Image (cartoon, rainbow, N blue to C red; front, side):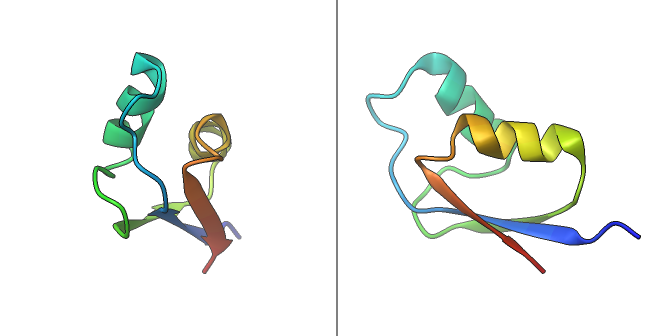
Length: 60
C-alpha cells in the first residue's frame, strides 16, 4: 500500500539552475512554505531528490 508524501519548499528557487526551478514548478511549488501532497512513487521521490536542498519531504 503506497502512502503519501508531503513536500514543502523551505528555500527559494532564485539563482538556481533552470532544471531545478522547473522541477519546483512541476511539483506545484513556487513560494517558501508551500506544501503539496503526492502519492508515493519513484517519479515523485526522484523529483524531490533533485531539489532536496530546497525542500523537505515527510511521509503522511
